[in-house]
Image 1 (cartoon, rainbow, N blue to C red):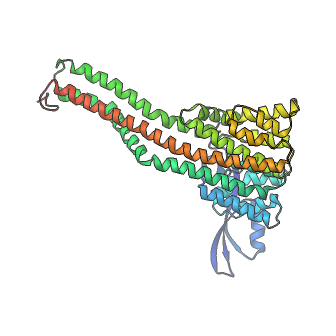
Image 2: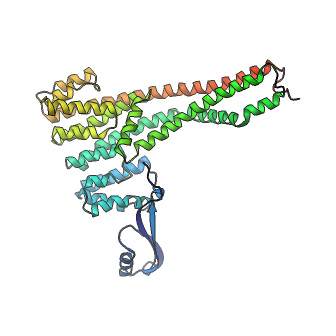
Image 3: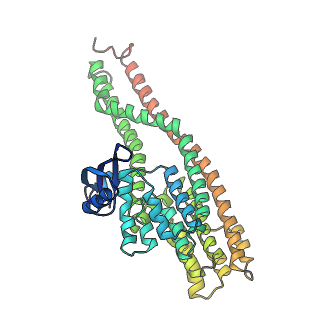
Length: 412
């Protein structure tokens, strides 16, 4: 799924040269052309070449991008397009502004697609700065020839989603640190703590103390596994959701939807995302079938995908009007949300889009509320784990005191 981390994804040329006009030595990285092309370009500009070296960028060199870098990449792309630059050239210009050699090299395959005559949609799928949500929004913009128009709705949605996850991580920061310390304590006990306790006691026949220690060891192993599992779960979800394989991303969506506490939040965000995309495309006079298909492809949440599949079936196969198909499809919206959608039976798609945007905003608010509830629940779970760890230690102290009057003095 991750592929070979040592595979070559692109090459770039590092040029060191002397500039007689500035009387300085400069360094520049070229991500297009051959060594001969770079040599001609530099010597044609009056520069004296010191060295030219070709480097291979491998998957292992791929970078991590902050939320600020992702947002500013989108803002720069939008600024070029709004200034009248063709979207394809806007992508090239935005990519060329990145001066970090590894990040720029990682983006080169996307530019190569455009250079080979590929579509903008294919190019966007190869830009690592764009996550699945961003690509879905941009795919909607490409479909209706309005990439610039989709940027603002995308940034608004991403801002809300980022704020939600930031609130969760901030709320769990202290409890999470305590959880890590508790796991480390359980691991230390497993690696030698229990053996040390038995050695300190010195009396193997002391009122079955050894049996109690073995019982505590078994409980400690259970706590250790229970503490490690969430980290394995998070790692698996991240790997699946960031995979290039569609089936892997759908598997991540299924896991999130079935996870207690997390599933409700995931569904709120899926409704907000797909309704925002569909509403944008309807505002741009896109065909309803195209808008529904794009919205369905944008999410990995099973209930949301099933909902849009039912909408498509009702409209395409059963001949239901647009608003009737949206309002009658079950399994995702509440009856109160279906009511205003059904009221648009005789209005334009643009009016329907306004109601869909309102529902999306309501679901974003519901996601914020659910995130706070999730934080409280996870905090309680972590506190319960800490209490169990402390209780295990107290159990050992009580067991030891039933054998000797002084803590761990049996070996003396």
